[in-house]
Length: 205
Image (cartoon, rainbow, N blue to C red; front, side):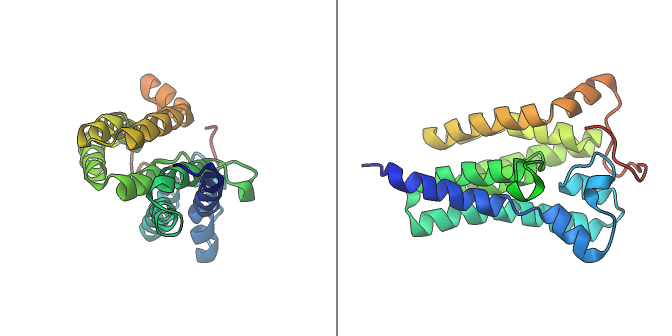
């Protein structure tokens, strides 16, 4: 029988790991401008790349993904397989709404991938291939993330895990909501492309 008393600790574990703002941490340690003051003001890897430091962007991407993976794996190890979904949800929401940054976090694509890798790794490969194809052809990171995430619930469902598929339906809806400004800019043709230079101050999200 599912023990609901352990679901809350699993979610909390995921949230605390997910709320680590790697984009802020790595840029601060490197002594560059606060990532929240440039580009979109977002704390994710795409905006860190606008500092001109590819290494920092890569470190942010890896950190944001691995915290999602770590949350799921730790919950699985300590609490059991059935609580890994709660931990994954917590990690994703922790990245989006970190308590350390007054609940103003990133948009969640890297953490989404990290959670997906731990819960359904074949679907994570499909996500990455879709992301690379769309990003390579359009140079829009946001469009690539949206297309890849839209395909993810179906990929997981085909793999046969209905509970994980249901989780990613929820995560995908939230991810689209967080990208609503990007969607508007894509439609208007004003979305920044990967590698496009920007001014030193944050623009409205």
